[in-house]
Amino acid sequence: MKKLTTKLVVTGFTLLVLSCNNVSDNQKDNNQDSVKPETTIAEQPKDSSIFDINSIPISDKEIGTFPFFSLPADLKEQNKAVNRKYDMLFFPINSKMTRLEGKVWKSYIVATSSTSDSWSLPYFQKSYDEAITAAGGVKIFDGKVSNEELVRIKEEARYFGEEGSIDYWNEPVRVYVIHRKNGDDVYIQVSGSTAAGVIQILQKEPFKQTITMLKADQIQKDLSDKGKAVLHINFDTDKATLKTDGKEAVAEIAKALAADNTLKIAINGYTDNTGDEEHNLELSKQRAETVKTELVKSGIAESRLSSEGFGKNSPVADNNSEEGKAQNRRVELVKK
Image 1: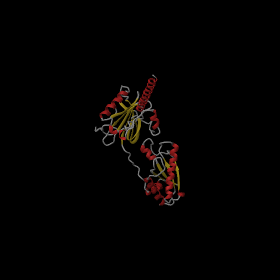
Image 2: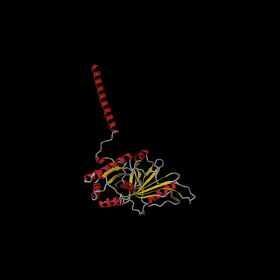
Image 3: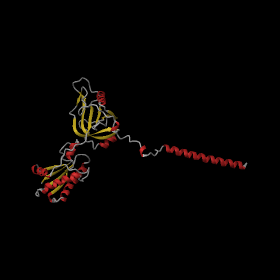
Image 4: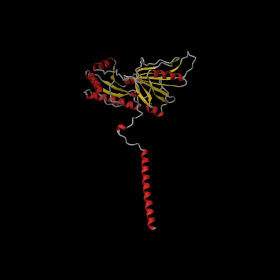
């Protein structure tokens, strides 16, 4: 009887151990269900937050000339539309505010005073929805933009508040794209309220540089005739380090100074209005000092030179456009 009892105890203990092992294995399996399994590079899923224009069918429809769409009947521009051959706008794409550059047209739209009908947002929205779709356009966003996204871009989107700006903080927006074969894709965003509508149109286009480097003889002439020569010297982004063509521009200044040993100049640096004011002021000073240092290295006496930075002060063009900002990023040589 004693042997039988012992055998039962041993058997029961064995079953208990096996049961515990099974529970442990099950727990391990259950825990693994909540852990993302390892995948090879080929198996990695694509980032759904990245917009791929190639996923949009190409439209070969004839869409005419920029800005492509007339206004719906009985609607008009509230004021003169903003129409720029090159600028930048942010478009909400996959809920992320995305910077795009190219031709820009934007305006506030209201009902005409000649019609008895009052403003209708659904009429405004449906008019553009059907017209854009007929041109091969595809809606890629419809909703509100998060406050976090708006805060993230606020320093860069300095155009907010000008004619044709969208009230992203309070109104939803619809975004469309017309994918073109040559890459000059057209992006359109439409928004509105119970009082008026807004439409923004951008056709992608690369920036075309129109600023040319002044040669030594032109620098001499400008200093003699105007008392000032304006140069657009290329530096590394947000740095005071000269790019290759920037060094070439400084070499032309050195030639102009070497041709007239009596000539003394002040080197004044300027920036556009993007970013922090104190940072821009310091950056402009450093860039002016870099030009001075390079001139001294090339054999120009330091006593003939001075340097100073003025940041975003005294702009020569509108900082609301990329072309204007390019004009404002400059070095001025002032005859002393």
